[in-house]
Image (tube, helix red, strand yellow):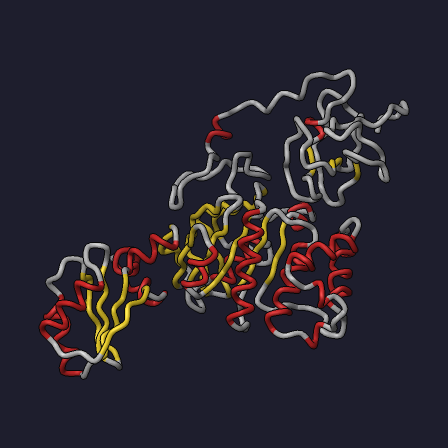
Length: 425
């Protein structure tokens, strides 16, 4: 505050005047770990601690982060007695225009500096390269991940998914190119960016000898989470773990341990959640429960980046998917578009001699992209121009088959479609 003993500013609130800690209505309080800009009109009137309002409907306040339930507010947006105008916005320059979000694959590179000015995607990579020894594990990745969405990083083992997440979290340095996360250019200095992110890696890294509550209490202390016990109760309820709060983590199943790790990453209400293999080593029931929790986070406005090697998981969770192979970005588009590229697959049960004739029998149908021999017979791939019914009807007319089933293409089959156009060509 100012040195003349002036009263701290109050934010307008529909429930009444803002009060000190312990008051009612639109209470103003400190929010740990959030740095706010000072009002240009009122130098010295707002100290370096954040101001937040517990009312979620404060008129005139701009939500800028999720460090409290209502969101921290900029000092410039606080109504200060005697100052009716806000600080003017920064001038728009050519450099500012250069950093508007580009479509994946764009050659536009944001101007240099410590941060990528708003508006910006949650994640921006430009020709990002990463090495492990002499081996390049990421090769020229250029892509944007939009805020408020769930983005999948899809690929087989060794594709570079975990390395990419390591770059985003600051654990792996870039060997070339540029990266921005939540508007800050990497490598970021200080702890501000880390406090805005939540991370769940493949290893849960929980303390097995402690209870669920004690694990979360320890993490809350590290992040300086205010009113920690109340926040712990909230995340336990969110993840369906309230009845496991006093259970020792070492006695929990794999799925429950995974949920505890996700709960820990949400304690400080991050703007960006990064999850590497969210359903690694869990059963089908736990898998669907974790999916439901991630969908809920998206509905609440959290940006989520999920790495997976399962196409069905990306279909279930993600708005877009960035497909990696051998450290290269093959494509970035919706899961539905990915599946449409590969089409549907019809698995035919038949003997080897009949399987060798399947291609000739149905290859002339429009929409049949290819046929492949399998251990049980053959597989036929079709796009929207043909239907599985058309294929099966033609086969029954010309061949004797034992049976068939229709399914979506899997990840390996998507790669077969992508690689000729994106890699070999």
